[in-house]
Amino acid sequence: DYAGETVVNADYGAHAPWARPASGPAVAVPVTRPVLLLSKSVLPQRVHPGEQLYYTIRVTNTGDLAQGVRVTDRLPANTTFLDCGCTLHSATGGELSPLDGASCPGFVCTLEGDQVVWQVPTIPGGRSHLWLSFIVSVSEALAGGTVITNARYGVSALGVSELWGSRPVTAQVSRPELRLSKTAWPSPAVAGGLLTYTLHVRNDGDPATSIFVEDRLPMGTHYRACEGAACGLSGADKVVWGPFDLPGYGAVRPLTLVVTVSAPLGTLLRNETYRAWAEGVEPVSGPPVSTLVAAGGAGGRLIYLPIVVRNASP
Image (tube, rainbow, N blue to C red; front, top):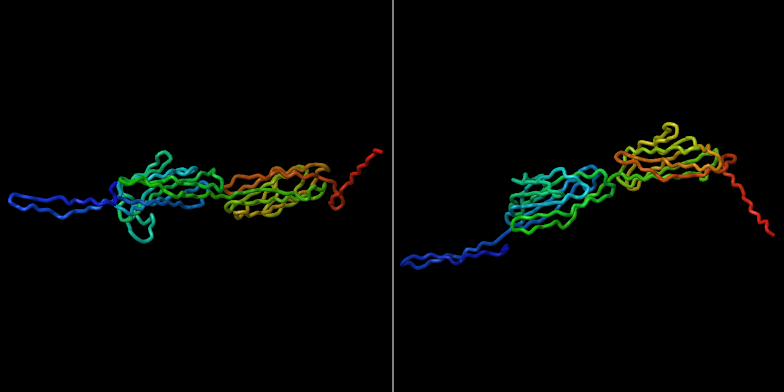
């Protein structure tokens, strides 16, 4: 590799009979080569399951003409390849964009196993820019918060050692992340009195739309009222709230269900079947809530019966 050096041809001349030999001045030719720079970006940086990611690799040649250019990029996990392209921009100044250039002459882009491979005949020198792009779709099964990492990409050319990208490119999967919980009051419940269930719908992900919540009445109770969103009794034993929207990142929506306790004293009321779902979000359930039915007094107040313990031993 003689790049950066100079080839000098100084020993040449001419002669003829009866003539003095003649020589010429030295000729110096600098040895140059391509100088490639590599960078990469992805848009958008937050993506929903099933949506698309657009990756762009930028190859800049600040040296001499580059020939036999080959660029590779390994597909990130949990994505599916859709398409790829190439744009060449020979401008030397100003803000550059992949949209400013023209399609790369003679380029070929293929998928080889899990790698996207571009082959480009030449990149002109003098700070030319090659924009290589590919599109993937994100798996619909990914949970919110999953980070999609693209770290293995590189470029090579004739006379140039392979150059690998030094900075991984990441995008994060976003989606609503619903959580559901419930409390009961009073506990223990009063036989013949009212029992209020409070459901808390929490969204730790992106904003959620068209949320529905349903709660099946526990045996030994009768529906009395509900609040917190549009709601009502559906069928004989199920209460439904919704639809309603909920901002993301920790927003909480309380919903209430009031029932009359008809179960006899000593019954354990089990409220186990309740769930929430939203547009693009699978249903989530909450932990069961059990409430003991105690004795009831006037006005629905609890009556606590004393327990007397006697020691009959002398």
